Length: 145
Image (tube, rainbow, N blue to C red; front, side):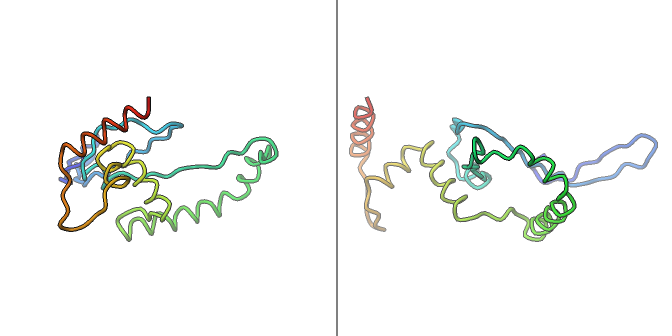
């Protein structure tokens, strides 16, 4: 499904046809998942979209479903415009906040990135010795209890 190769589909009582399958996986969760894949391929494919608002108490709209039902034609048109943009650009538009959230997520699953961001001064000719990195990781773990 991810190779990009053509696949043949057979439909009963009709001619088979070929197509190039496209799949997107969407995961919705309350907590950040534990992912051990820290590769560039993973980072390249990952899109993080946080929903930071909660609608409880005074913010809760008990008539929201009815209000949205009245707006369905406009919502559909808005969705189709977005789909057209995705198809034209061959990718999903990412906001500045989405990129920042992705960077924070990648740092959270990769201690080397955290070390570089928090401890290192980046220079083209600079090196970090393994023992310095190991010492900082050990001290960091010990300071967290």
